[in-house]
Length: 250
Image 1 (tube, helix red, strand yellow):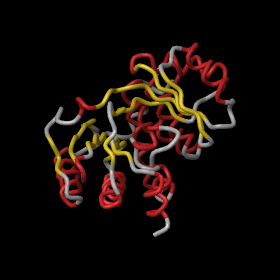
Image 2 (cartoon, rainbow, N blue to C red):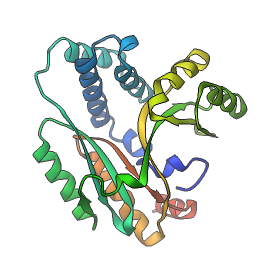
Image 3 (cartoon, one colour):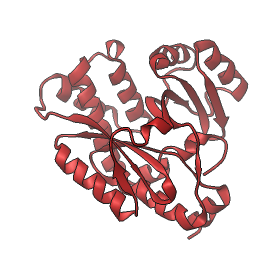
Image 4 (cartoon, rainbow, N blue to C red):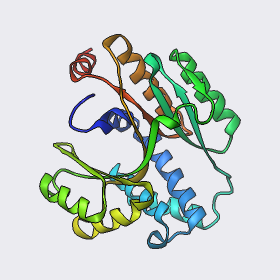
C-alpha cells in the first residue's frame, strides 16, 4: 500500500466500501442526519453538513437519499440520540488504530469493537493510548480530472493548505484541522465541489508491515468497517506494493 500517497496507508481501502454499498449508504445517511440535527438543514451555514453531503455525493449516494436524511435530522423525524465515540487500539504487528463511531448504544459498540480487535490478535486500549502518534488534519479530495498536479498544488498552497499529493487516483490536500472549511471553500470556488472534505487522523510515522501480518491487518480494517456503528478507521501501517499485489492475486 505504499505509493503515491501515504494516506493510502491510513484509511481502509475504498474498494472494500464499494462492495458494501448499502451499508455504506446507511453510514453516510446517519452522518448527514446527525449533522442536520445538530447544526440545521442549511449546508451553507453548517460546515459539518456540507462535509457529510460531499462524502455522500462522492460515493454516488442518490440525491433523494441525501435529502431524506437531511429532512429526517432537521425535521425531528428521528428521535434516536447518537453519540460520537473514538476508540483506540493496536492491531497485528503493533499497528496503531483509531476508530470513529457514531452509535445509539455505546455499550454495544464498545463490546463489538473490542471483539473485532481481539479476534485479529490485537487489543483495544484506553483513550489516548495511540492518538498521540497521530495528528488531526483537514483532508480534501478531488478527482484527477479536475486539474493537473501543478495547478492543484499552486491553488491549494494559495488557499492555505500544508501539503498536496497527486496521482492517477486524484488529488489529496492536507491542511490544519481548524483551516479545513476555509481551505475547502477557496478550492471549491476554483474547482467546484470536492469529492470529500473531512477531518482525518494522519500518523506521524508509518509502521512497516510484512507479508506475514499484512493480510491480518487488512482483515482487521475490513471487519471494523463492516460494523454498522463505525464511521471511519485510521491506522499507521505501510504495506509494500509487492505484498499488496500478492494479496490481490490470492
